[in-house]
Image (cartoon, helix red, strand yellow):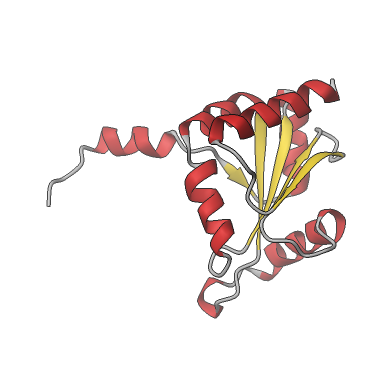
Length: 146
């Protein structure tokens, strides 16, 4: 097996959007950077569409580039396997997010919020269309919020 040079690995890791896990921190960051918040509800170890969404959309170059410039990313994960259980404090945070933004318990659910946490637009399930079309939808929703 070939070894990957450390700097190449570092560049690859840096290209991924930074996901956050606490709404209070995300709101502060969004206000400071004048960005919107993208909240994603996922079941990382049981929800096939959630896993697909993260791999095919959120990890894509068009989305990553857009998110880096315009969004603060917030993930509320609800794993089911015992080995993947979240710390109790994180579970409380995620439960509170679900109470406020996902009362129907939809997975995946992606919600665009303004910097104060007000819902701008929501996508239940996997967004339709290409990666570029989703980015265009996000941009349109952000533009309408101004």
